[in-house]
Amino acid sequence: MFVVTETRTGLTGTPVVPGVAYGPVTLARGEVSAAAVSAFGDGPYADDEAALAAYDAAAAAVGDGFQAKAARASGATAEVLTASAGLAKDRGLRGAVRKQLRSGEHLLPAVHAAVEQFVQTFTAMGGLMAERATDLRDIERRLVARIVGEPEPGVPVPDEPSVLVAEDLAPADTAGLDPAIILALVTERGGPTSHTAIIARQLGIPCLVGVAGALSLEAGVPVLVDGVAGTVEVDPDSDRAWSLVAASAEQQAALQAWSGPGATADGFAVKVLANVADGGSARAAAGGPVEGVGLFRTELCFLNRTEEPTVDEQAEIYAEVLRAFGDSRYVVVRTLDAGSDKPVAFATHEGEENPALGVRGLRLSFSNPGLLTRQLDAIAQAARDTGTETWVMAPMVATVAEAAEFAEAVRGRGLKAGVMVEVPSAALLAHRMLEVVDFLSIGTNDLTQYTMAADRMATDLAHLTDPWQPAVLQLVAITAEAGRHAGKSVGVCGEAAADPLLACALVGMGVTSLSMAAAAAKPVGARLASVTHDQCEEAAEAALAASDPAAARAAVRALLV
Ligand code: PEP
Ligand code: MG
Image (cartoon, rainbow, N blue to C red; front, side, top):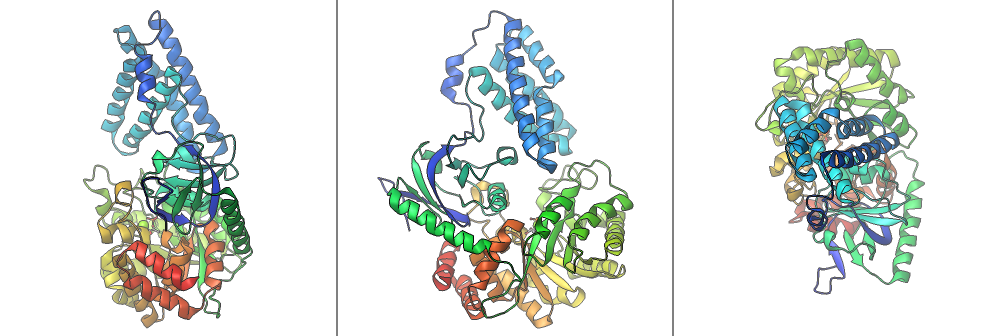
């Protein structure tokens, strides 16, 4: 294990995607340098028109940059980037800048005042519009960079394959990241469920998050990133580094050869499933060695919709996913988990004080039961149309009564009914939940958030939002044990299932299926195939007995080598 010493040979963090990478550091820049802004001062412009022309050039360059990224992205990311391109070139924003210049402001304060004016207007509109405030501030930083002649903040495109080091990465930063050029991701902040971790998992590149001191690494310095041990070694012996990379590449190639179905080395079957968001991701996942879909996040189909789609329209969207798995595999469809970090305009309640603890997921049906019944009708219609085995589960279930009512509605449509275990109350009462539903699926992302009382998006709390936390594992174990007792399936569909080491411990606790980003299926399936069920049980015991996440990881790693 590396330690941060005075000569600093290494840094440590939370490993989230396995693999070893060696290459020079490239730094993603968060802010325009204060020195450049101060050197620019009031700017060299003879008059307002010259300043406005400089603004126009900057806005065009920023807008074109977003447009180019949008062209390389797809789905919701492409839409967000296209909207940002429109905002950067917005005539109203330009008009506000011109007004500021005419009233005697210099260019940088004029841009700032105009952007702030827009931020206030958008914030007052609330909902999705209010969320564009972050994008506007990002646009301002990019405009300022262009005006003072600096590169735009964000992810650079390095000339040679490099290790990308950042404070944390936003969706706009990661759209179009090329794994051929970005060898590994290292972020100072962020946790196992952060956007950075999710993207790295999709790209299949080694990733460490929560690496204290990462931003003090110098651009260009060679580093060795170990996505299993959680270490970043600075300027290592290059022969040793290359041989470690080669050994890891060999291991990764062996993992890629795994073709399912999921089982331990001694033949204990565990279903390896995919998490999908729409027809496109379902078709991509269906080509891999998965036995079905363990989590279809339906709300992700509607993030940009202002009106609720009709039952027929919804049925067609769901059928696209079901059709991809119509060859005797099955799909677990989750009903709308709108609210909190996934606002859906036609469903989410606005202006909640504390949305993560508010009306999200199944709770939306309390005051709007039609929303759920129309969705269930559409899912049933899609199941009939495609003939695919369809299970349906509800998110954010807190009581047995909620589970019973939901199960009745689902079974009434001839489908298998389950609920997610994301709230500690559901885990503690798993045995009673299983009296009224056919299966449970543990959402470790939210279960961790609610168990540790730590916002899953709060990068400062990444040490708490770690599914290896003993209290979270205890709740998983209680739930899995209840499933074993009832003889019913208990899956895990949160990010924990995508961690090959943790996946083994989860199976040892009694979890019967693991659902994850499709890219994680091979590493997880191969890891599972390399250990016996007894070893998984020993790993579970060791993880549960450990005092903290780092000790749990180390204990499980030692048992499963
Ligand atoms: C979870 O909470 O673990 C989960 C799978 O749901 P989501 O990440 O979509 O909230
Ligand atoms: Mg969740």
